[in-house]
Image (cartoon, rainbow, N blue to C red; front, side):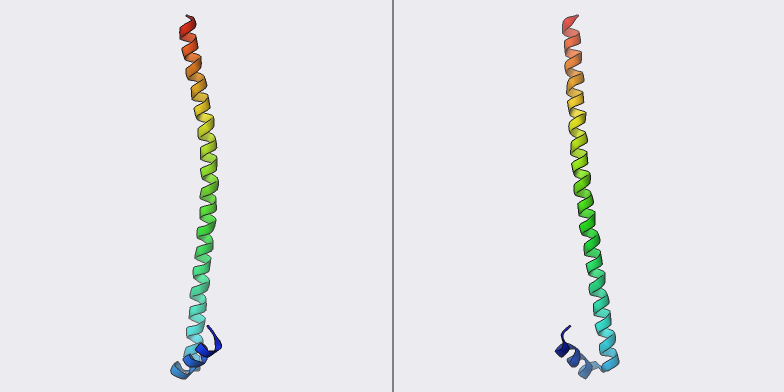
Length: 78
């Protein structure tokens, strides 16, 4: 809050109430920033997990294709 807003609050509410309101607003803003930071960290974790899942899925499918080709070749050679 700017100085003029604080002065207006002091005129309307009184000095103690204005200070309490300002401290409450500051605490709420700080809390909201903390929540946003946690959400951003969570999104980063999800992005890393997504990359790992795609990597392991690719390895799985390459293995499955190799096994399928091996079975087909085994049946053709008999």
